[in-house]
Image (cartoon, rainbow, N blue to C red):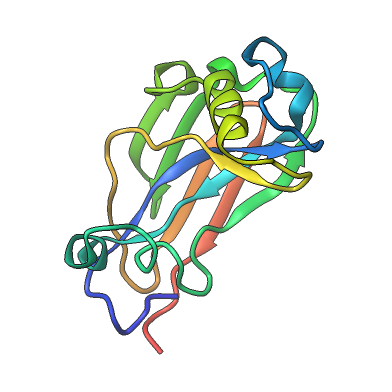
Amino acid sequence: MLPPESSRVDYEGELALVIGRRIKGWPQERWLEALAGVCCANDVTARDLQKKDGQFARAKSFDTFCPIGPAIVHGVDPSDLAIETRVNGAVKQSSRTSSMVFSPAFLVAYASRMMTLLPGDLILTGTPAGIGPLTAGDLVEVEIEKVGILSNRVAGRT
């Protein structure tokens, strides 16, 4: 849902890592052992509020932001998968997870050094180039190879 407080809400197709066990200070070489699986995510952001506030908390925290799914997929190494975001059928983002600034292995180890990660915690891995605005009625699809397609319709301001 587009919040009335924002005039610019963007899509951000991302890979989500789902933590499967309690980890703290987890070694990077064992990162796959820490996962319950992976899924698609749309890290929706109220871009105007992010710029106004100078940080992300409000911009990423509205109800219905960050849909994930359609399911947690087990047994997939997400190190090099195709990721694509479409809006109303038009490709807006297209890349591979191997092109991300930080690898999934690095992110699991890094996050677990700062905080204890628990089963069900998510780590979103970053978005490819091509983010852009959403309008009411848009259909957003985030597709990740071997993972699935997350599909959501954008609802108008309430």
